Amino acid sequence: MSFDFTEYHTLRGEIQQRLGDNVVPVIGREVAFKETTETTMVDAKTGVDHGGADSGSVFVAGQQLSGRGRRGRSFVSAPDAGLWSTFYFTVEESQQALLVSPAAALAISDSFKELFDLVVDIKWPNDIQIAGKKISGILPDLVAVGSTLQMYLGIGINIKTPPDLPVEVSAIATSIEKLGLEPPSRELLLANLSFFLETRLIQAKVGSSSLIEDWKSQLVTLGKRIRLATPGGDVTGLTVDVTAMGELILELEDGSRGTYAAGDVHTLDIED
Image (cartoon, rainbow, N blue to C red; front, side):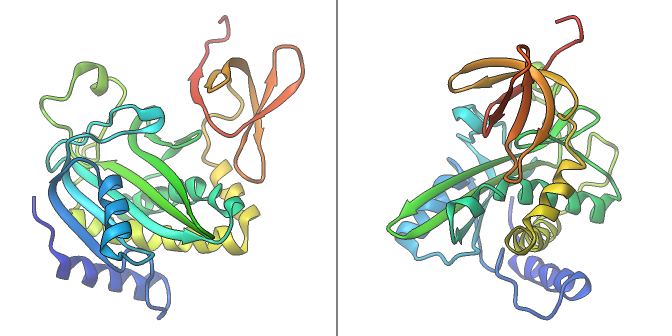
């Protein structure tokens, strides 16, 4: 479970030159790696608070012992089975922070298209799926320090499926290897993800409407009847659209419409 920094920076430079421009990359320009850690999110915050990590740094681990997903759920991140990472960068305003999740989802999608010529689905708000099974997850965490807005963006991508993966997880998750594809090196996957994340964050800043349209085109949640578990309770309705900031618009059972920024989506059968 090592990380080849030279290989990564070479690959990052190559993709920047081939698909981008001659601008020096910001996202992913510095990498910190641990073979085993509690969570890369904690590593990132410690690296920023006590290590002076610059905006654009990414913290990577071969294994997370206490990986977590949305709403504090545990996130399986077995040894050498995936890319477990947290990106750190600053944003200029809180509205811009709302576009980080769509930008990250599209960056993962772009990476899969580039590496495997594969189109993924996006399940609102932060899951990446293939054939209905989760292959990647996103966890953004915005922290205000004085006038500075710090974004910690956790991204996990399943490269391989551990043989001891619990049955209940295996039923809803997949991996690059499980799809019959050649697993990429962690360095290659991170180089692509870093490049496309930077590209999509720039798009979010200069053309947020086009970013949302791109994201919306891959949302499999739209047009479905769902139960949405929110901090304020469950609501049921038909997903009809998203707002310019990526919030989900539901047509509720009484005919009214509600807008939701977060929640867990459970797709319902027609008779439910």
